[in-house]
Image 1 (cartoon, rainbow, N blue to C red):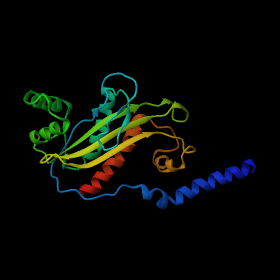
Image 2 (cartoon, helix red, strand yellow; image 1 turned 90 degrees about the vertical axis):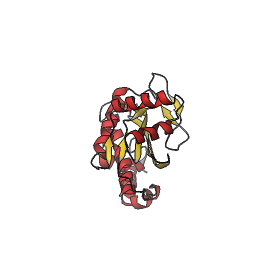
Image 3 (cartoon, rainbow, N blue to C red; image 1 turned 180 degrees about the vertical axis):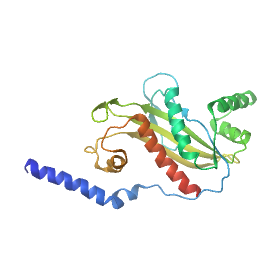
Image 4 (cartoon, rainbow, N blue to C red; image 1 turned 90 degrees about the horizontal axis):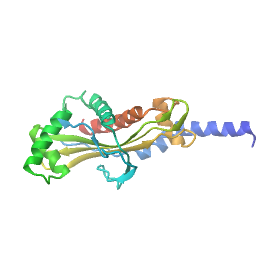
Amino acid sequence: MNVSSKSQVFLISILVVLFCSGCWMGSGKRQVTKLPKLNHIAVLPMDRASSKPASERPTCNISGSSSVTSYYVTPEAAERVSQILYSLVLKDPRFKKVTQGQCLGLLNSILQKNVKSSELRILRSFGKDLDADAILYGKLYRFRERIGGPYAVKTPASVAFSLILVRVADGAVLWRYSFDQTQEALTSNLLNWRFYKEQGMRWVTAEELAAYGLEQAVKELEQMLS
């Protein structure tokens, strides 16, 4: 097969993926079920899975997966991702922003009462103090910036986070979402065409990759709450 024929085959392969996306991509969608009525959802700032500089390590994923590769996450990165999350969910009046200062104040108060409080118990206590029906809590496991520019990189951006929606009344986890992605070239994986269709044919920043993942998560959550 000559070079021209190989190019034609490659182009046809891309077109097949694009036009058959309903068969290929649709089957991988998560089933969406309706959630019980929630009038007040408190949104906490993104937590950091790793807050001390260290090498990568497997970490328990709150969203149900056995583990995810975690890197040191800076406070600045967590703040940027928190702001993206707020910008997406606060369009809905049911969601209420909880600031970092509020979180620290509530946490200190809870730990004074019970030093051994579990993470879920702390979330429920937050919700009760905030008079919320549910808590939207996220943990940022990885926020690795690309090394390079939009059209040539040495290392692509990589982001991993989890979100859970916890009902305050009984601590039930109503919804989970996990995002763990390192950008790949379209030529390496043709199923990435949807990402490139939305983001353009370029290498994105970690912030852009996080925004992409959060948009998918919030879109699913909104469907379940409607």
